[in-house]
Length: 188
Image (cartoon, rainbow, N blue to C red; front, top):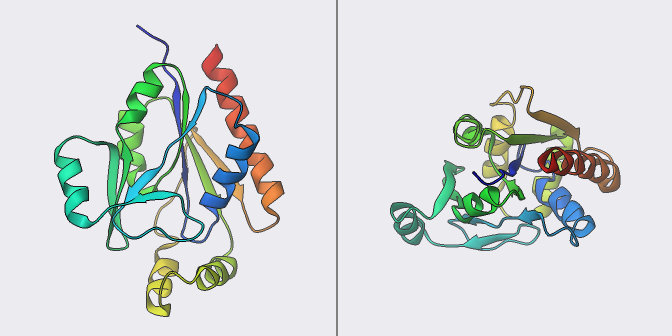
């Protein structure tokens, strides 16, 4: 059997800075061919600061029925999916990095036993400010996201917690260290 890689799924409440930290690490690991950064599909238009493939609801469902997703979930009235292409990369022994959801962790743990969960957090006032500044949603939607920010407990031996209330560099370096450690484990 070929060596298995590991899925590193970055989760946390809206506004925690998951995409920002993923991009920070991507820029630092761009020369490592064993680390793959996956673009998720979301049933909404592309927004500034978020790297995803935009599809409408019907197209998302068509792809779901065709088996196009390794993981998928619904949140905030939208459909999210991580392409099934990650399975091929994991079989090759690669480290796959994805922006995920706390709601899909139970399924991800069952499906991908070599899972690393990165839980990015920030205080609620920081989350609120970031959500308003990014300008994607109205205040009612932001309020709903903030209410749900404490909905899921993320805990376990496979979890690294990162507080992203300070500088991007500080949190980014912590995330980078977690990925470098994961790459080292995958090589063993």
